[in-house]
Image 1 (cartoon, rainbow, N blue to C red):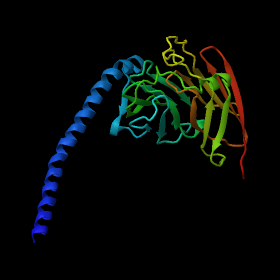
Image 2 (image 1 turned 120 degrees about the vertical axis):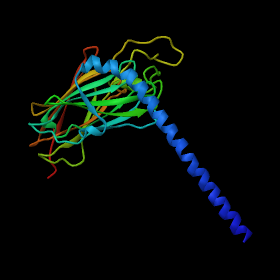
Image 3 (image 1 turned 30 degrees about the horizontal axis):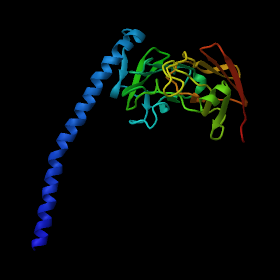
Image 4 (image 1 turned 60 degrees about the horizontal axis):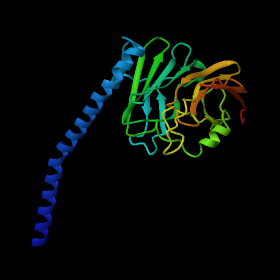
Length: 284
């Protein structure tokens, strides 16, 4: 009897403690979220006004157009994976014309502006970015009808834009402009197909010493633009900044009506230009 009573007393005591502690945890989470939001608004509002002026940007529960995903805590701030998932198909009558990507507190907040077309079938994007401090990453979808929709994700990371580059940068310099293009999964004609594009490039920020302890900071040198065509029709083009990670990697969609050639053109801030082609063939 004594053992049963002691266990029962301990059980209910722990239950009461846990129950009483829940409001404190919830309140702390709410306060942290509120603090992040205030810091976010302070960083984002001037940028929003400069880029979008007085245009309304629909966000939160009111928008069902897109969602951005990124890890809450980045394992490596220099290569943070970001994916943008859209919830409507790309059609001639209604499509996402542009996706703007920003990192609020990066030295250069703009990651890139991606121009899209109905030929993509889907406007989903994925990439790797540098994150310099705790901040929100935002994606703003601009519709062909003019509306703006936004999704954001908070990321904890530090120091990416000024971090010395890894030893592998020598390989990126030696093979600068070399591309790899591949279809992800089986090709299906007349349906959106996912493509992965990788480009060798050091993507130097201009804020990073070339090695630890060095005071020499080379000027910015990064991929500034890419254009993707399929059989002469534009699928996507993007204007980019050094917030994109070294050796840029992108995923995007295109809808081939028949077999043909996917062509990618890339350029950087030193006016170097490269192009590569990928033959699209159906397995059926």
